[in-house]
Image (tube, rainbow, N blue to C red; front, side, top):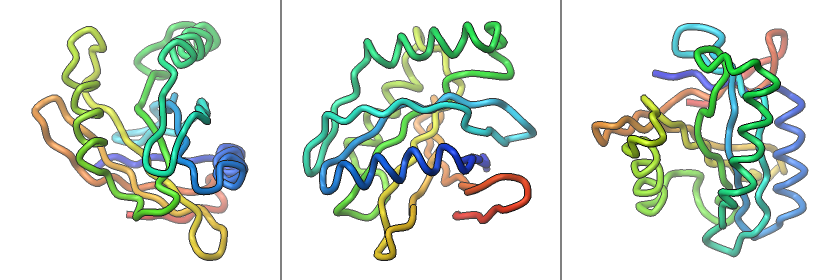
Length: 162
């Protein structure tokens, strides 16, 4: 099982983006640092705001530029810092992968030009109290999907969602 650490500053970015988007889906990519066995700390995200009630559009050209910048800042240390996956919101639905989500993620992880051993999909929404709720799933090239743990917060103030 993979642990996905979301630091407080990125939680705030996601919360603000969800509040601004309202009932429209939004999302982006996750860039992370490998910090331990099966544990990845999200360092950066992109926010793509071109969404509708039940879908959102990922802007590939924007994502590629942000990834290049991330790799330059991390001295191309791909074993430690890399693309981790995608995130998006389900503001009106449960934060669980849809069939479309499954197909999209499997296309990414099975694309030999991407070269990923796995990819994570984080799905988030605002709960009834306006707090962040979500699920994370790890997709494997063999077609498997495994539920992952989300760790909200930093070392001193964490809580987990499984």
